[in-house]
Image 1 (cartoon, rainbow, N blue to C red):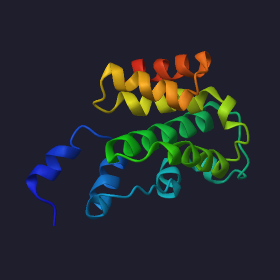
Image 2: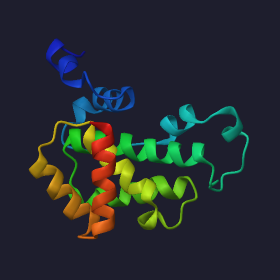
Image 3: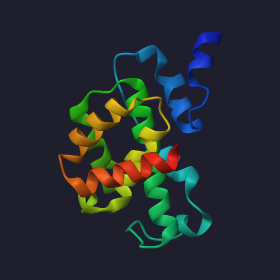
Image 4: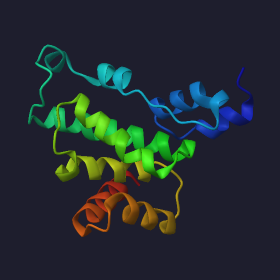
Length: 151
């Protein structure tokens, strides 16, 4: 049973991230994320009838970017450990048939967007950009772009 303080904590998060927090509340020390229900619910009827390979359509790219954003937000808010994050992003990309996710700007903009929906400081943002972007200036700029768009 959730108490009032816990409900206040999740206000302001996307419904997907809030649902993850409510479900994961009793497991406070671990992080788990399944994009299956989120991606299934966000597919348009035309996407659900298409093949499982990645389409270059704007809708498919936006759906992937939103999924990465939701995952990032839930990950940061739950306090997940750094090493598993990029593995999780790789898993999301694999589910969508994206083989070169590390070079896909939608990955990095989505990460920035998810960070922008959290209450991190500029210093924390800089640390996430450096760690997850691996010092790659282009990736770090794309993370910033997504962050700025979400704020």
